[in-house]
Image (cartoon, rainbow, N blue to C red):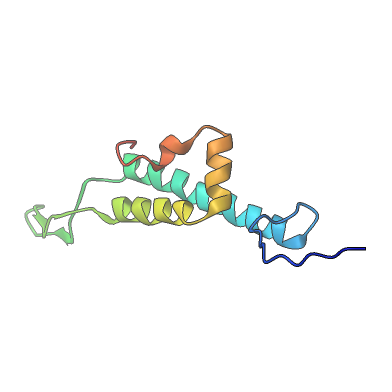
Length: 102
């Protein structure tokens, strides 16, 4: 008998392991976050105001950047998750991560 020592490590989690399903749930949750953020970007108002004065005029009009910030954070989270990236690649939906795609 001959034994060989190796220092190989793998980041692949086998499907029968409990961590596999946890990582898959996290991957799909991250993808869902991107999908919800895209909807928010498309439907949220571009400007918000703090309120209205007695004449009905808006007070302190500001750009509503929160949906765009959330989309950026969600995309970065997916890009940092190898399982989420592999799911998007398998589904041919990596366009969700393209900044030009809104």
